[in-house]
Image (cartoon, rainbow, N blue to C red; front, side, top):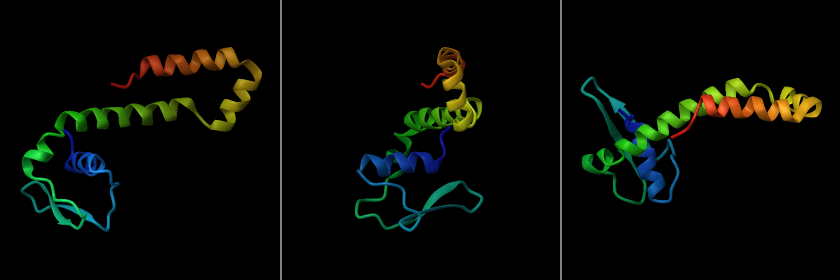
Length: 105
C-alpha cells in the first residue's frame, strides 16, 4: 500500500506543482495518516482522489527502492570512471547485470 505522502506528492505533481513542506503537512494521531495543512492554490485532494493514486504510488515506491539498490550497486562515480577508462565493455556488462537484476516497473 502506497504511503499518503507518495500519493499526495503524485496529486501535487499532476497539478503541475512540486512538494513543498511549507504548503502541505501530513500527520497521524493514531488513527491513520491525514493531510493536516494544505495551502496550495488548488483544492486539497479528497479521499477518493488520493485513493486513485494507489497503483501509481505503489509503482513509484517500488521504483524508488530499485533506484536506491542500483545506486548502491553502481558504486562511487570516481570508481566507475576508473573502471570505464580501464575496460568500458566490462563496465557496461556490470551495469547491465545490475539493471537486469533490479528492473523497474
